[in-house]
Length: 96
Image (tube, rainbow, N blue to C red; front, side):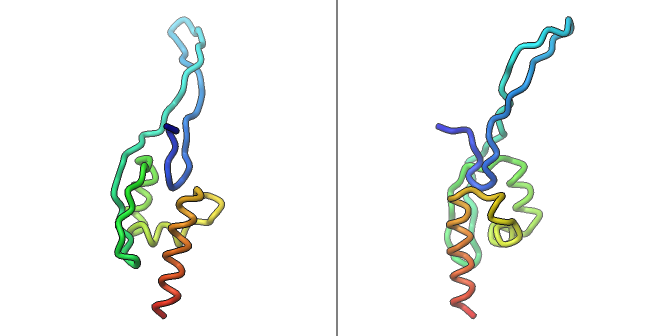
Protein backbone atom coordinates (compact mmCIF):
# COMPACT_ATOMS: atom_id res chain seq x y z
CA UNK A 1 0.00 0.00 0.00
CA UNK A 2 1.41 3.38 -1.02
CA UNK A 3 2.29 5.84 1.72
CA UNK A 4 0.63 8.83 0.03
CA UNK A 5 -1.92 11.40 1.13
CA UNK A 6 -5.24 10.95 -0.72
CA UNK A 7 -5.77 14.70 -1.04
CA UNK A 8 -2.41 16.45 -1.41
CA UNK A 9 -0.37 13.53 -2.75
CA UNK A 10 2.38 14.00 -0.16
CA UNK A 11 4.57 10.90 -0.25
CA UNK A 12 7.74 9.47 1.20
CA UNK A 13 10.92 11.53 0.88
CA UNK A 14 14.49 10.33 1.06
CA UNK A 15 17.46 11.74 2.89
CA UNK A 16 20.40 10.86 5.09
CA UNK A 17 20.86 9.69 8.65
CA UNK A 18 23.91 11.58 9.89
CA UNK A 19 25.75 10.10 12.84
CA UNK A 20 27.89 11.93 15.37
CA UNK A 21 30.95 10.84 13.36
CA UNK A 22 29.26 12.39 10.30
CA UNK A 23 28.69 9.04 8.57
CA UNK A 24 25.79 9.24 6.15
CA UNK A 25 23.35 6.42 5.44
CA UNK A 26 20.21 6.68 3.32
CA UNK A 27 16.78 6.69 4.95
CA UNK A 28 13.12 7.45 4.17
CA UNK A 29 10.99 10.17 5.71
CA UNK A 30 7.39 8.92 5.75
CA UNK A 31 4.39 11.28 5.97
CA UNK A 32 2.25 11.22 9.09
CA UNK A 33 -0.82 9.56 7.56
CA UNK A 34 -4.11 9.29 9.43
CA UNK A 35 -7.30 7.56 8.27
CA UNK A 36 -10.05 10.12 8.79
CA UNK A 37 -13.70 10.53 7.86
CA UNK A 38 -14.31 13.95 6.35
CA UNK A 39 -17.83 15.32 5.91
CA UNK A 40 -18.76 17.27 2.81
CA UNK A 41 -21.32 19.90 3.85
CA UNK A 42 -22.77 20.46 0.39
CA UNK A 43 -23.06 16.75 -0.50
CA UNK A 44 -23.98 15.54 2.98
CA UNK A 45 -21.64 12.62 2.42
CA UNK A 46 -18.73 11.24 4.43
CA UNK A 47 -15.44 10.43 2.69
CA UNK A 48 -13.00 8.06 4.40
CA UNK A 49 -9.49 9.10 3.32
CA UNK A 50 -5.83 8.64 4.25
CA UNK A 51 -4.69 12.20 4.92
CA UNK A 52 -1.37 13.52 6.24
CA UNK A 53 -1.61 15.60 9.40
CA UNK A 54 -0.39 18.79 7.66
CA UNK A 55 -3.23 18.58 5.12
CA UNK A 56 -5.73 17.79 7.89
CA UNK A 57 -4.71 20.95 9.79
CA UNK A 58 -5.09 22.98 6.59
CA UNK A 59 -8.56 21.54 5.97
CA UNK A 60 -9.63 22.52 9.49
CA UNK A 61 -8.14 26.02 9.09
CA UNK A 62 -10.03 26.60 5.83
CA UNK A 63 -13.33 25.57 7.41
CA UNK A 64 -13.92 22.04 6.15
CA UNK A 65 -13.39 19.79 3.16
CA UNK A 66 -15.56 21.81 0.76
CA UNK A 67 -13.83 25.12 1.45
CA UNK A 68 -10.37 23.53 1.24
CA UNK A 69 -11.03 21.88 -2.13
CA UNK A 70 -12.57 25.04 -3.60
CA UNK A 71 -9.63 27.21 -2.53
CA UNK A 72 -6.91 24.76 -3.69
CA UNK A 73 -5.86 24.61 -7.33
CA UNK A 74 -6.23 21.34 -9.25
CA UNK A 75 -2.47 21.09 -9.79
CA UNK A 76 -1.96 20.51 -6.05
CA UNK A 77 -4.69 17.85 -5.74
CA UNK A 78 -4.67 14.13 -6.47
CA UNK A 79 -7.07 12.54 -8.96
CA UNK A 80 -9.37 11.34 -6.16
CA UNK A 81 -9.51 14.83 -4.64
CA UNK A 82 -10.25 16.33 -8.07
CA UNK A 83 -13.23 13.99 -8.47
CA UNK A 84 -14.60 15.01 -5.06
CA UNK A 85 -14.07 18.69 -5.91
CA UNK A 86 -15.87 18.28 -9.24
CA UNK A 87 -18.94 16.69 -7.61
CA UNK A 88 -19.03 19.42 -4.94
CA UNK A 89 -18.90 22.18 -7.57
CA UNK A 90 -21.58 20.44 -9.66
CA UNK A 91 -23.85 20.13 -6.63
CA UNK A 92 -23.41 23.82 -5.73
CA UNK A 93 -24.17 24.84 -9.34
CA UNK A 94 -27.36 22.75 -9.34
CA UNK A 95 -28.58 24.31 -6.08
CA UNK A 96 -28.31 27.84 -7.47
